[in-house]
Length: 68
Figure: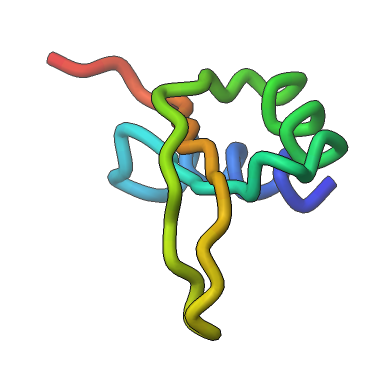
C-alpha cells in the first residue's frame, strides 16, 4: 500500500515526472511488488552500501506524468 500511495502522491500532488528506486537484487519480493506497480528495470549494477558491503542492485523507474 505504501508504494501505491507514493505513486498516487507523485501523480496528483508532486511535480515529479518519474519515480526512481534502487533495490538489492536478492530481494525478489520487493522487485515483484515494484514490477506489479508498473516500475521497469533500467539496469543492474554493483553498489557499495553505507556499511561498506558491496551488493548487486537493480535500478528501476516509473513515469508518473507525461513528459512534454
